[in-house]
Length: 185
Image (cartoon, rainbow, N blue to C red):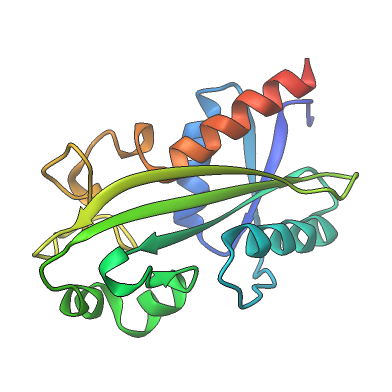
């Protein structure tokens, strides 16, 4: 039986769902996976992409949904890959990104969580984790985890046991959870 604290995480990426489920469960929010390929517009704005994806997700699921879109931003590359991070990962991967980065390895990961329900007015929550690109690909993790080192750490996301308490995704989901729990009370 579904309750007030239930929400559907809509994505084609099971890894994102599993992280979201673990994070949101710590706030008393139950998350279910609704696997779907969502409409992804080409835009330089994560907010715009997340808004469209949330509307598409709700139209397919017909239940309260959250979606997540993220971006790896590397200032020395003009913000590349930014909102095109998924495409860049699929085409050139971690090795390709590392080959593009020279001396200035500063980077940040941004996540935008978008919630949508029957009102069809997506609400956005952003999380940012500054860091840098490692000089070596580490094993483990998924996506850019093997090459992103969060600020204040010496190891990549792939080797940090508490990634889900400091990641860009955690920071955005924490904001969403605070709002969602307050809204439902």
